[in-house]
Amino acid sequence: MNEDIRKLEPTALWNYFCDINAIPRPSKKEEKIIAFIKKFGESLGLPTRVDEAGNVIISKPATQGYENRQPIVLQSHLDMVHQKNSDTSFDFATQGIEMYLAEEDWVKAKGTTLGADNGIGVAAILSLLSAQDIPHPAFEALFTIDEETGMTGALSLQPNVLHGHILLNLDTEDDDELTIGCAGGIDVTATGNYREVELKSGKSFQLFVKGLTGGHSGVDIHLGRANANKIMNRILWEVSQQINIRIHRIDGGSLRNAIPRESTAVLVVEAELEKSLRNKIEQITKTIQDENRTTDPNIQIEMKETDAVSHGMSEDFQKNILNSLYACPNGIYRMSAEMEGLVQTSNNLAKVSIGQGSFSIQCLTRSSNDTEKMDLAQSIEACFALSGADTEFSSGYPGWKPKPDSEIVQLMQKEYKNLFNKEAHVHAIHAGLECGIIGTHYPDMQMISFGPNIYGAHSPDERVQISSVQKFWKYLLAVLKQIPEKQS
Image (cartoon, rainbow, N blue to C red; front, side, top):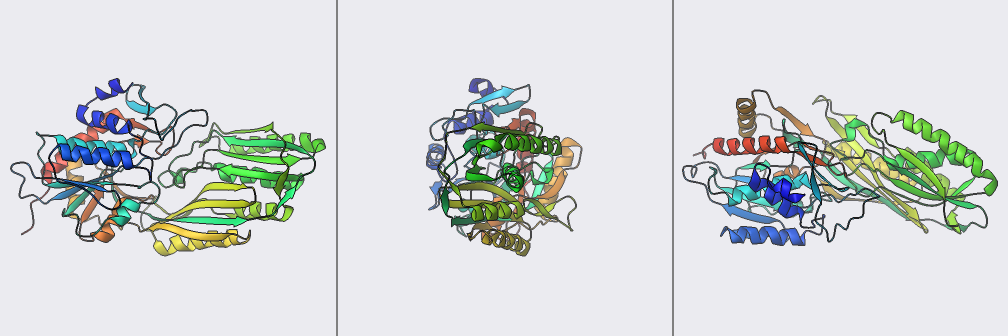
């Protein structure tokens, strides 16, 4: 399958994309891809260094005639989100991504995330590093690590390491957009222990919520897609109001920055109540499917008998944790009053793990307003305090304040109009971009983000549009030619 993709134009970019997708590169386990990028830079005879965090920086001098242009930084992240469908057998630790041409203009992966986020950006930079016939100013290629699960690479970047005046981040996922601002975020994790009780009788059942659309918990949060953790909790809460069930465990979601697509629970009910339980779940299923028929048309809610379990949650804890999960905010919290259509603050109830006497609830709270971000995080803390949880805030990162009048924004707007005869959409994004963090280290650096059409990021539906990659590449090369001269 990859051989067909290697023949696509621009061939250098697609070949490098195939090369890096053959390398396992999950967040926090980027050793192999770091080694590959380091060897790549050294093989070209270019100054190459790896900092203490694992970020790789490769420097390339200006081509002839561009020596007096402002130096720039081209930046993408090396890690990718690892998600797969439940019926897909795949080992992200050892296997390369299995790509294929889908329809006539798309590249996808078989049952997993594709890694176009941000592999296409990485491949574009590698193409520029190796090219001998592309005009460009002096640039530093900055490849950061761990963008998807904490942005620790960007956070660890030291001042005075980079010398560029302009940063081009290649991590936007719509080819008609120029991103000039982003939200900050913080992980909110509530943990605790509870008393299990012995369940001496009853039948055990496993409940499944699956088939949800999912997606990026920032970029896609405004689309109103269903959250498997919220649906599972709603089912359990409503059932428990009428039928005496005991919950053994709940497991839902996988990544903090992905809208949860699946959840499972194991519960126990007296045998004579099985019919009532099935009828109630059938009723709730119809309601949930009807409510979400547009955003999540493939929702499935199933129940099947399973091996008997001997212990479950105490009655008090079960009531409290279901109430806390029901009350936990999810989705849009507030829209921006300054920028029309921009989500200002949101929360993703990302992962629920409850069983064997302990629990962990993980949320990712985002906002372009740092004080409002913390206010929402604290409300989540208060919510789970009602279930006896201890809450930790971690991996916080700042937002990126838009500067629409900056020289690079004006230049790229003009060049987009010249090339494509229409206006680019200049906007801020409700997701974390490393620009916000890098800007704290380099406050005078102008920054902008752009890229090709990548849809379904952070889910196995991820796909990248071939014609859009060609458009993005053409635009990138044109922008490099227009980088302004150094200021005297």
